[in-house]
Image (cartoon, rainbow, N blue to C red; front, side, top):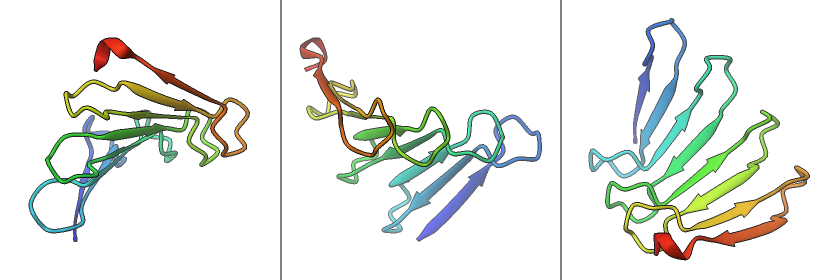
Length: 102
Protein backbone atom coordinates (compact mmCIF):
# COMPACT_ATOMS: atom_id res chain seq x y z
CA UNK A 1 0.00 0.00 0.00
CA UNK A 2 1.30 3.44 -0.97
CA UNK A 3 -0.15 6.61 0.58
CA UNK A 4 0.48 10.01 -1.02
CA UNK A 5 -0.36 13.24 0.79
CA UNK A 6 -0.81 16.47 -1.20
CA UNK A 7 -0.99 20.11 -0.15
CA UNK A 8 -2.47 21.45 -3.37
CA UNK A 9 -2.83 25.09 -2.33
CA UNK A 10 0.36 25.18 -0.21
CA UNK A 11 -1.34 26.33 2.98
CA UNK A 12 0.31 23.62 5.11
CA UNK A 13 -2.84 21.46 5.37
CA UNK A 14 -3.30 18.14 3.59
CA UNK A 15 -5.88 18.68 0.84
CA UNK A 16 -5.78 15.27 -0.76
CA UNK A 17 -4.78 11.79 0.33
CA UNK A 18 -4.33 9.13 -2.37
CA UNK A 19 -4.09 5.45 -1.50
CA UNK A 20 -2.74 2.80 -3.87
CA UNK A 21 -3.92 -0.42 -2.24
CA UNK A 22 -2.39 -2.91 -4.67
CA UNK A 23 0.91 -1.15 -5.48
CA UNK A 24 0.26 -0.79 -9.21
CA UNK A 25 0.98 2.95 -9.21
CA UNK A 26 -2.68 3.94 -9.63
CA UNK A 27 -4.64 5.50 -6.76
CA UNK A 28 -7.50 3.21 -5.72
CA UNK A 29 -8.97 5.68 -3.22
CA UNK A 30 -8.59 9.46 -3.13
CA UNK A 31 -9.80 11.43 -0.10
CA UNK A 32 -10.26 15.19 -0.49
CA UNK A 33 -10.59 18.08 1.98
CA UNK A 34 -11.35 21.04 -0.29
CA UNK A 35 -11.38 23.80 2.33
CA UNK A 36 -8.55 22.63 4.62
CA UNK A 37 -10.71 22.30 7.73
CA UNK A 38 -9.73 18.68 8.34
CA UNK A 39 -13.19 17.37 7.37
CA UNK A 40 -13.35 14.96 4.43
CA UNK A 41 -15.53 16.44 1.67
CA UNK A 42 -15.34 13.66 -0.92
CA UNK A 43 -13.90 10.22 -1.50
CA UNK A 44 -13.18 8.85 -5.00
CA UNK A 45 -13.02 5.10 -5.65
CA UNK A 46 -11.44 3.22 -8.55
CA UNK A 47 -13.28 -0.05 -8.02
CA UNK A 48 -11.93 -1.98 -11.00
CA UNK A 49 -8.31 -0.75 -11.04
CA UNK A 50 -8.42 0.91 -14.46
CA UNK A 51 -7.30 4.31 -13.19
CA UNK A 52 -10.74 5.90 -13.68
CA UNK A 53 -13.01 7.07 -10.86
CA UNK A 54 -15.97 4.66 -10.67
CA UNK A 55 -17.69 6.14 -7.63
CA UNK A 56 -17.50 9.44 -5.75
CA UNK A 57 -18.99 9.95 -2.29
CA UNK A 58 -19.73 13.44 -0.95
CA UNK A 59 -20.18 14.42 2.69
CA UNK A 60 -21.59 17.94 2.43
CA UNK A 61 -22.22 18.55 6.13
CA UNK A 62 -19.10 16.88 7.59
CA UNK A 63 -20.94 14.34 9.75
CA UNK A 64 -19.06 11.35 8.32
CA UNK A 65 -22.11 9.99 6.45
CA UNK A 66 -22.11 10.11 2.64
CA UNK A 67 -24.87 12.48 1.57
CA UNK A 68 -24.53 11.64 -2.10
CA UNK A 69 -22.74 8.87 -3.99
CA UNK A 70 -22.23 9.10 -7.75
CA UNK A 71 -21.45 6.06 -9.90
CA UNK A 72 -20.08 5.64 -13.41
CA UNK A 73 -21.71 2.30 -14.29
CA UNK A 74 -20.84 2.41 -17.99
CA UNK A 75 -17.13 3.27 -17.75
CA UNK A 76 -17.44 6.31 -20.00
CA UNK A 77 -16.18 8.77 -17.38
CA UNK A 78 -19.59 10.32 -16.72
CA UNK A 79 -21.50 9.75 -13.49
CA UNK A 80 -24.83 8.27 -14.59
CA UNK A 81 -26.31 7.00 -11.32
CA UNK A 82 -26.69 8.98 -8.10
CA UNK A 83 -27.70 7.80 -4.63
CA UNK A 84 -28.84 10.47 -2.17
CA UNK A 85 -29.27 10.36 1.61
CA UNK A 86 -31.25 13.52 2.35
CA UNK A 87 -31.83 13.00 6.08
CA UNK A 88 -28.34 11.76 7.05
CA UNK A 89 -29.40 8.39 8.44
CA UNK A 90 -27.07 6.43 6.15
CA UNK A 91 -29.96 4.96 4.14
CA UNK A 92 -30.38 5.90 0.48
CA UNK A 93 -33.53 8.02 0.10
CA UNK A 94 -33.39 8.57 -3.65
CA UNK A 95 -31.70 7.06 -6.69
CA UNK A 96 -31.51 9.04 -9.89
CA UNK A 97 -30.26 7.92 -13.28
CA UNK A 98 -29.03 10.20 -16.06
CA UNK A 99 -29.70 8.31 -19.29
CA UNK A 100 -27.81 10.98 -21.24
CA UNK A 101 -24.59 9.92 -19.51
CA UNK A 102 -25.00 6.29 -20.57
